[in-house]
Image (cartoon, rainbow, N blue to C red; front, side):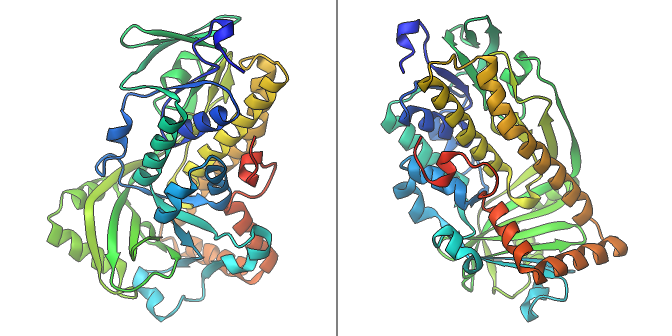
Length: 420
């Protein structure tokens, strides 16, 4: 499956060496396809603590993919198992100190252990740790990485796609994948529009060290100002993600450490003891963006280039990793049949596989954001009753756990833990 004999520089050119793009490159390389990664930022800068302060909840099915691709030895020591998720509609996080109120939802990995071979509900991993593991694996595989380099234009012919970089270099391949985020140049060059809107909110992200053990429990509190999540990390730490208005978020980021800590402790409550800030505070403006199409002639979109959603459900990265698994399988199966990787038929299979899930999650997260980012008493009662009802219905609760774990629907082989 070599591209050289056809005069191409690669089988697939991937614009964007982030987590979804690098995962796709590794999956293709493992199956014998040649991928080239292009990114404006070198790997060494992507793993710096100041580059990305977020941590991600990785669905257990998404982690299976990384295990198949050989990343487990690097990732498992850094991965915190999520054993339980407690969702509470409460006036403040500290309300959990006396146990949840009447409106709460508890997910427990023990309930589905038989179906998942003892896997947790998911894993919490700091993004920079994931980026470091992916970078090491890409380099070990000998995958070509052009960085710093930026895609400037994409020209499509009946036979190939030609990518021109900002420094004048040109590359050709049967297919170009846009995985370079919401401002995707590949998407723009392919003439694919995007729909969406900004939320009047930012996510404030910080890492704290806890006085008491979190015991692998992830908490999400729906507060009057928006969701507030306490997500367990290794070494008795937690990643805090809370929603504030944009001006207030920026004020928090700029606050003196003493003032930030005082605000944090009031918001956090005392049920896990004192929370001490470690590292910088980050803010991320929140928005929804959905590409109008997943593909165009000799172009496929992946990750945030295709879908950028609100982090309320913690599924944004998992959506990109699902897409990487589906696209890799589509392309590898096509190559084994001797098909043109950039042909309309091949790309249509990928689009059919992923479009409905992408749109469904985008709609759901937007609805959740509207429903849970307010203090309307009628809506508060309605969502509380809904959570309480789901909490009392075992099959519904287990379905949501499987769904959040990425283990429902037509799963690509990598998400089932099987190689391509």
